[in-house]
Image 1 (spheres, rainbow, N blue to C red):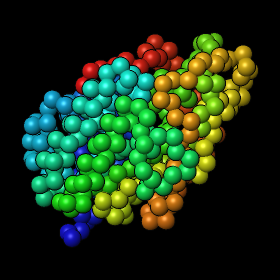
Image 2 (image 1 turned 90 degrees about the vertical axis):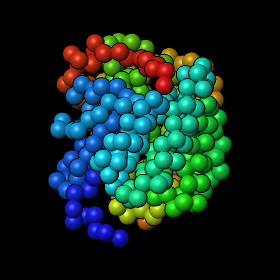
Image 3 (image 1 turned 90 degrees about the horizontal axis):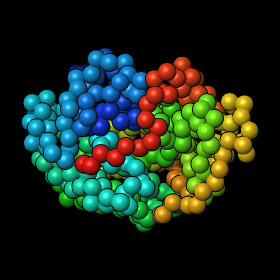
Image 4 (image 1 turned 120 degrees about the horizontal axis):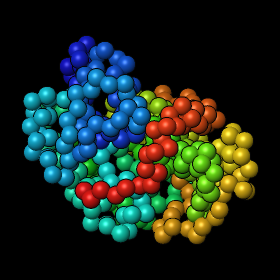
Length: 332
């Protein structure tokens, strides 16, 4: 195999506008040996919601409608690695428009990867999946059966299964990453941690579906970015890697801890609602494989990460307080 690490490593990040994608770009840009191209369906976001500082070769392309243009770009640039974060990622709205989630999360992935399997310049395709493909999952490993409980999760599981077929039958250089609940500065404001900080500053009640008893495993986005890079450099082709902390905690506990850090009374700041349809009780995945094979482990303690988000919101309050605080659905 040619030694790619003595030349510029060429990366394409699909979904570069995403919280996770922009954080990986920031990490890659810290190494002068990397060249990075970003692709997203929307124009490049404001710096407030991007982890990288700038200097990205950016292309506005939609995976659903611009595949031919995307392939032309790939064939001209000949990336060594493509990392795909693109997805319809919200769970609750997937019940209303399941066909749109299947279009983006499954059919477009099938079309893209079927074309990429014949590109000899590609050394690695990293697909960012989700532990929701397992359904409610108490400490599952990468070999656990898939049991999705929402249209979102089912669409992701279908794509994962096709990609694994390509890896088995065509030596497609696939790596699948499943990480648990990411958080950190620059995250979408409707996610539970930034939303909690914002609502506390605004004096609004924080809604806890199902009382917030659901168990989740929160991991800082920079730890996930490091794990993805380690999987690219050290992972075995055709592998799935989990990236997660050792233990989980309830949504209620997370909100309570943010209240404590900001000096607010949890009981006065929250209100409980019924559970959402298909809401899984627990997401705890076993990351022993990544720790053993890749030498990866999370480095950012939860309290440190929560304080970072609180500080980010505070320092950028003028822009954040006027930004939309709810998910805005875009078809395809």
